[in-house]
Structure formats: structure tokens, C-alpha cells
Length: 231
Length: 231
DNA sequence: AGGAATTTGTGCGTATGTATC
DNA sequence: AGATACATACGCACAAATTCC
Image (cartoon, rainbow over all chains, first blue to last red; front, top):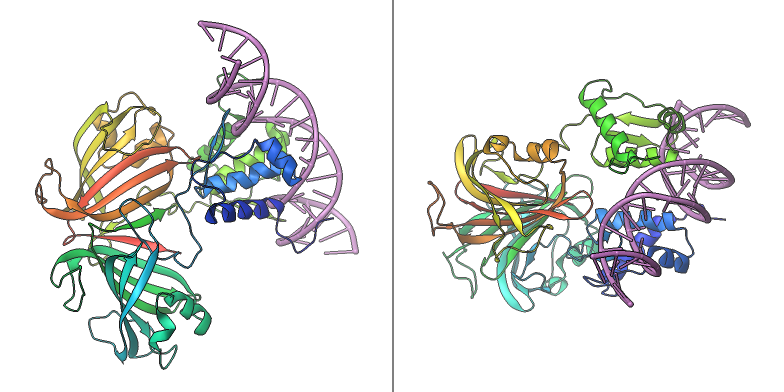
């Protein structure tokens, strides 16, 4: 009756609902239909639906209130191309974009931590924006072993798309260290060189362990906050 | 049949099993009896037992292997009391401790975000140390609905142990927002009131969705960094 | 204030699929 | 290949919390 290769129904349902939330078809505060009604519409048993909803609850998408209903709680939007971007406007959210400032292949300076197999790297400097508001500058060092040359046109604001589709490089894990530092001398306005800023240092690893990328980001703490979700 | 005031059966069972593990009657690697057998012995339905076992799995006490059995896993690392503490010395690591500065139950001020069911909370102020070096001050608001009164002796530096064992409150998820702010006027040295600091705002949720706690931490970015590991 | 209707929570029992031994 | 054990899925009955009249 059931295709042997298919995912469990409750996984299908929960993923469908997550897509609905990600796409905005369900938004924060929405109440879902009653469980029995919803299960009937979907052609599944109530218990199966409840298992899907439990999944959403565990992931923080849903709040279940006995006697009242199931309510969408939108705080997360993982697994998109911004999954590793952790700066938001102080009020929450904001569409991230980036302006390329410079792009060069060069020897890794000695103040970088060890990463990658090459002694050269691509140094990418960008101005980051949220809803077009400049909020940070970043300097990314992609190890030189992945590609000989990067053209500025390749990047624009879709750096990780480029990694994934042109280089076959998929970042699966990263570690951030957040503190404070003075903005670098090359920063454009509105940050100014030497001014005290939030500071993020990141090392990123590809699928099976090798560290591929090092980056540092200086952000204006009045314009953006770093978000971290823990489990 | 069921005492009206009793906990759900599946909670009773899962807590009984946790006690068995804590007391050493079940140790790492032990295999539990088959579900149907165990359910029969306990006089409950298989589904109810499975719910108890799912609880243990979520808390890291148990590994369930289809076709094989349920195995005790005393990892300790997943449920350790520092699992959600994210400040480290600039060189990495450091043993976290805390000094209690003040503890009061009071009305939640209006500048707190909405959380919990009560309009009162316990305000806990602590000085945080790493390897005895003071690195931050924090103010925690625990929702007032969990307990009427907290005695200072209860806390010291084992706040989450208190949550877990005295209140039955288990924090399963949290969201941090990291930026910068001026240290509060009540801070002891070495931070000083009004000085610019790293700033962490956190909302924490308990197992099944309700937000239970709000906290804010001011840290000296010269003495500590916030670590975030992403997947 | 209070009772009825609605909605989720708990618990039971069963049948069938799938992984492990 | 067969036996064992967990995974998925269905459906039902009643309890408890909330909402509405």
C-alpha cells in the first residue's frame, strides 16, 4: 500500500508544514485547524498527525495548548541559504544582501589560523546589509585549493550558492567566536576605522571534516545583533 | 482507575527509569527488556511505554535501535549543566562558576519581553567567572509560576541543577541575541556601570514549548568570547 | 457564575512494515 | 530463512484545559 521508498507520513506532513511556514502560508500566531479536522483533510489518523505536530513543537515552530489549539511560533528559518548567517536587525529579521568590496587571491597572512591545504587563499571583502541598511563588513578567506581563480561576477551576494554549485563545496559546520574589536582600516562608512564593533571570527568545515574557510566580521551593534539558537 | 492528581503514567515510568539509571540499577550499555514484555510487566500499553522511552531518548539517556533493542546511554555530556553556557576565555575553555549577587521575587518590569504565565518572576543576579576570573554579570528572570520562593542557598553556582531537580524544569532550547550594551548600574567590578560590553539576551524554553526564563548577560569582551557552533 | 461545546492530552489495543540478529 | 524487536499507522474512549454562550 505504501511505497517502500517513501518517507514516513508523519515526516512528510511535518516537512510540508515547515515549508508552509517558511513560505509564509502560515505565519506567526496562526492557529491550525483542529487536529481531527486536519487529520481528516489529510487522510491520516489523528495519532499520525500528532506525531508530525510533536516534531514541529520540538523544533520550535509550534506551540500546542490543550483545550485551545495549535499555534504557529515563527522564530526559526533554518536550512535556507542564509542558514549560517546570524545577523539580524535589532527588531528581528531583515533581508541579507552584500556588496563586493574587493576580491584577490593572495598568500594567507600569518595572523590567520591554520585552515585548508593551500598556503594561498581568496580574500573576499564585502559590505553586508539587512534590508539595504549597511550593518557590517566582512573578510572571508576561502582556501586556495578549491579553485584557481574567482571572477567578481561569480559572487555578488550569492557566495554560498557559488560555493555549492560551482565548487561543489558544501559548508556543513561552523564555529563562531563573538567578541568585540576595532573596525579595520579598510572599512567603508558607516563603520569607521578604529571604531569599537561587534566582532565575529568563524571557521567553517566542509562535509567530511576539512576546514575550508575562515572569516571575520565587524558589525555595528546598534544596527544588528547576532542570533544563536541552542538545543 | 487513575488517581486524578497523579502525573501521567508515561511521566511516572520515564522518571522511574531515570532514577534506575541514576541509582546504578541500570548502567551504560544495558539493554532493556523488549517493549511488549516491559509494558506487560508494568501493566501499561505498549504505546504508553514508548512515550516514556521517547522521553528518555530525547534526554539522552537511551538509544533505541530498531530490530535490536533499547540501550542505556549514560553520556553525561548532553545533559550536563553547562550545556547552554557559551562564554569561554579568549584562549578557549575555562571552568564556569558564579557568585550570587541578589535574589528577589518581584513584578516583571515592562522592558522584559513576554514569557511565562505569571506576571511575577524571580530576579537572579550573578557574577560569572571562568577559572575564577570575573568575566560577566547576568540577570536572570525565572517565571514566577514554577515556584513561590527560592532561597539563596538553593542556587549558588548550580542554578540549572536546581531547575532540574527541585523544580522539574528542564531547559531544552534557547535563543540568544548578542550585541553590545552599557553595563548596568548594579554591576560589581571589574565591569563598571556604563562601560561598553558584550551583551547577550536569552529566552529559554522548557521541554514542551513554554518559555520559562529570560536572561541578559553583560560580558567583558577582553576577558571572554561567546562561542556558537552551527550546523 | 456556570454549564456546554470544543480542543488537546493520555491511554489502550491492534495490524503491518522494517531492521537486526 | 526465520525469529525477534522496534517503527509506523490506525482508531477509540475518556480526561483535562480552554473557550463560548
